[in-house]
Image 1 (cartoon, rainbow, N blue to C red):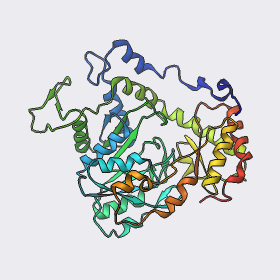
Image 2 (spheres, rainbow, N blue to C red; image 1 turned 135 degrees about the horizontal axis):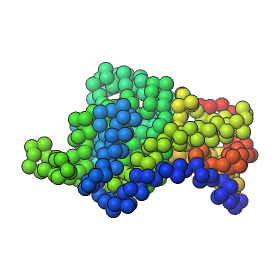
Image 3 (cartoon, rainbow, N blue to C red; image 1 turned 90 degrees about the vertical axis):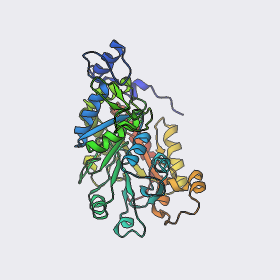
Image 4 (tube, rainbow, N blue to C red; image 1 turned 180 degrees about the vertical axis):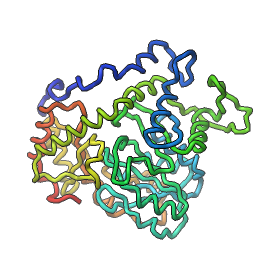
Length: 387
């Protein structure tokens, strides 16, 4: 494998020297818990306020991670044992696991095209649907306007998993904006990262319920004092985001536009160097992508493996995003052995073939050229046309 000098591949000067202002303040005063004393306003509160505005929602609750956010969002919507929840079949396994965690049954929603869900199951559902969970993949926003219309017609809440799509937009608007509840993640591979952490944004009443479930069920009084005698208190869990995490998130959230601009620039440069003969797997609205990754479609599963291995030999990272749809994993075959729903056959066929190459804001021009050269060298493993 070619050994690459990381200083040639990554330009760390792209990091704003002022980008750790809130993190430094948190470390300086030593208050790492969610509720701080003194004049400094909690970074957790600031993150919630900022992200609520970003998604165009009334409120937001910062939580321990994105999976927790999905679970609490479903619970706040009243989803429970035996309920059927339509979940994008092409998604990370945590999405379906969150549904199972509240006792509900995940029902796979197939793909219409490589990155867009098929709405057929909602056009005239044969059985009641309690909620719909749509996933925005690798910085590519799903157009959710039609899904929103169908959910409204059926009186079904829509949850958008924006964990990988923070900052992305389709022709229908910003990812998360049309959801009843938008859930995002701040895990390592996201646009904004503090290692772990998540957030739920939506109407104030629903978010307040999420907040209590994540904060030991307490009604918090002024100054952060918990009240478990209040009739609104409930039995909750300790699923809060820490101040250290929140301060890192806040610092990055405030410069997100710069991050997105840099990623879009890196991806545009890569596409220019690839030329017109290398097919790229686009969303329905490429200009709105967060551009954290550039996607390709392999001819088959073996071609996907050879493409990734070939790029790795040149020091370039490429991977299959998710090799399977979630119903194909053994854990779900055991949990839901007789689930009466159609198999998501198009998603099953596409999943092992969808390839991802990161277009980080830190990539240098030299790195972009190296990536382009590697992709062109193994272009024979890619389909001739986009799906």
